Amino acid sequence: ESWWTERHERVVARVREGSVDLLFIGDSITQGWEEDGRRVWNSYYEPRRAVNLGFNSDRTETVLWRLQHGELDGIAPKLAILMIGTNNTSMREDPPENTAAGVHSILTTLRTRLPQTKILLLAVFPRGASADDPLRRVNSAVNDRLRVLADQRQVHFLDLSRHFIDEAGRISEDVMPDALHPSERGYRLWAEGMEDLVSTLMGE
Image (cartoon, rainbow, N blue to C red; front, top):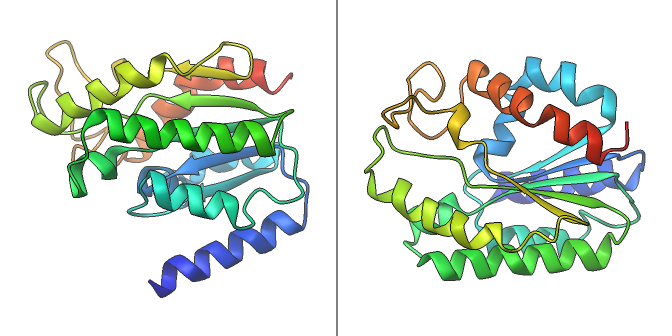
């Protein structure tokens, strides 16, 4: 799609400028830092020279392609934050082990290309209004497989699910109006939920 190619070229041009300390890598949930998450991004991440590598509708293999085609060239960020997989499990109904294998390939690429960069692997966010939503269950199964990919040295794993759900496991509409994409409040919960770890991993 033309918007995807244009976004990729824009990101590559930004990366070529250098001065990148923090990367966010993912799909529309990550791209949304530029929309509903903009004000939160500006206060938390803009001062940290962050670049948004989130692309709507991306799956693990499209992320992998982007990372191998210029989006990591010539930079050495302090931290890369990765969350991907919800489109593998929904749009294509990939089994959890396939999605996890895709994430593993991305981690291998990041570790190889950015050996000095810490990686924060986020559990795929909960989706679907209720705890027994079938896609929520699949994402949980993906997360069980992602957890073991962290070595706690270069790759760290964090599950922020509890920040988005109530005691009954429901996602409230003011956090994720469509039970998938965060609102501004959802982005604030996301940022606050990982701030201590982000600060530590960035060596602040």
